[in-house]
Image 1 (cartoon, rainbow, N blue to C red):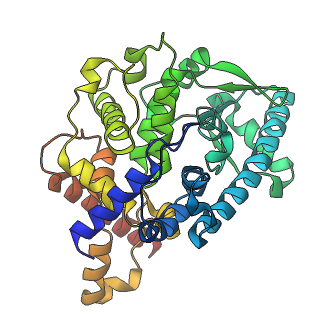
Image 2 (image 1 turned 60 degrees about the horizontal axis):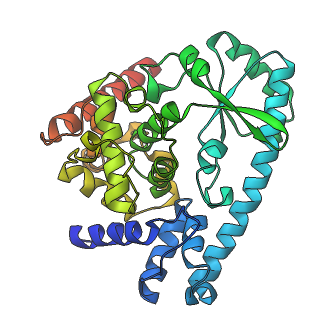
Image 3 (image 1 turned 135 degrees about the vertical axis):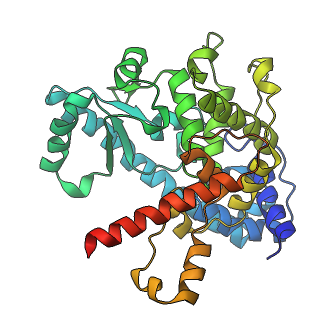
Length: 355
């Protein structure tokens, strides 16, 4: 597949998902062939609910692609109900042990959508104070293992410049099925969603939909300086996420300060995001932002080694993000080379330790 075809598929996915988080949907303008092309891409990336919402009142709802997306949405809605029940249980178990958690992403992000079932849920992400981390793990280890998809954190690596104690101080309580659920402040939440999108190499379109949805629902007293933080890298990535959400997904950013609306996103970042969105395979989800290990026996086979190294060449987003660079117009090759060398060095070190 050539680069222009790859780009067009990614752009098609972006155009189709524009505004998909809103209650009112614009007319669907894709052709039946385009919808068939998009269906597998979006279904595989956890965007079936959003895709179904885009077509649920159109003639596409009864097509084979429409039926598949509807099936994906129903499954997503069922999983959403199960997760919401588990959230209440999780908070109850931790509070019974004297531990207060903050829920991040997931249900907290879905609140900005027209319907919470439009957002696919994964793990239940909970943040606890560092001193409570071990005890919190014991709470879930003593409970029924089959019930839990808990991802427990004592820090948020995406917000490494913010202490967990400040996150708790700024957090707030929201009601969830008669349970008080603690969530991040709007400022910390938007920062986390934007940084998390790039941490996983911008692989999931729904990650940018999260950013778009929350931006459109921000209160008038939103503190932009608090959200952006003081680190130049963080400010640049968050500003880039806002512009990408606007340019690719049509997010309304009238409430965003002019200095951020005028932020310039480099061409390579647009291109990489669209390339990622053109090839949304389930196996890529677990690899986004995570290096695949080299096979030890490839070290003894030069031809295989060359192929293995080529497949593991880092994309510009993850290379820049992991090396704490900024998304600017400078060449990406130095970042990619640096990330590749660090990855290869870790592999060789692990091999030496294993022998």
